[in-house]
Image 1: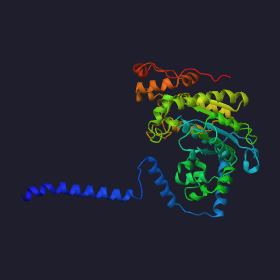
Image 2: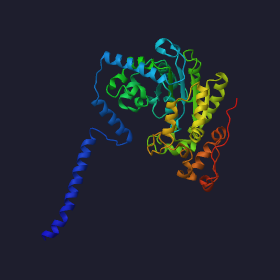
Image 3: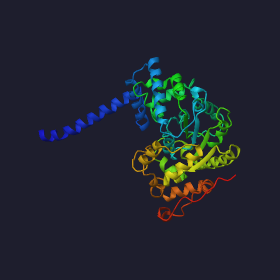
Image 4: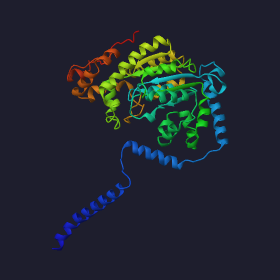
Length: 397
């Protein structure tokens, strides 16, 4: 009899433990609803980091960082083919060389953005429109505040940007991509959350780049015709919608957002960007260009040199080093730029079902035709090594 009862002890104990867990969960749920997602983990990690960082800094700290950064920029430029003097420095009343990269989520913009950031003496405005979350800005009313923010940022005016700094406080990746700023924030995070310091720091740099994935190209007209930015150039980066959606299916935040997951909207933006490229190149000759992610991935050296010629930049040793180190490795992390890039563009051929691909192609006939993306006819055709999904295209006036 005793042995029989002993057999039931583990069962009773297990039930008791489960009861305690459920009770604890229900009690906690009354005051706080926990959502364990990558975003919440990242937010909590960022918040914890912030709590561990010194909360104050002195004016002497800021002045020391600014002095040291001037020396670093001078050292970087000593190995770069740039002859311009003070005319490229906002701090001295000049105008920096500005490049704005316009793209969409999971279209290769992080990779291209970091290529541009490898330019010596570059200040990187990384995705400043995060506060708009999971929407595409196509016009008013969102475009009014978005364009105001972008213009202020391009002029290194960070005053009245509480939303921007609050987002950076909770999401460190908004700052970490700006490597030259971030290296000064590791010990004193509050420096990079201070509008006055960030404005002064930004004005030290002769080259500025900005990456946008939440605003469509047509809205760049307002910035291109602004007298404050006569030398600013816009670069449009597009990607095969099948590859875009294959990549986005790994992003947990994407599917609830129609602007991110609906093929009709994704391809509507590709058509809109094509029309905008036609219009803007006519009205602002020499200031707008475009490229496909697939072309960049398959021949990054040629495409980078072509792009840099358009931008009036040299491919420095630092840029070449970045290209070599980021195109000969593989990393499974979804946001990593360390990839064998030639293998990435056509991953969708094996990863997606033909049923889904057919659905995308039906919604994207015009976009695919404009940008030179060839349709797959059936499953075997899609997965065939002989099927090359990209063909020639031309953005004509």
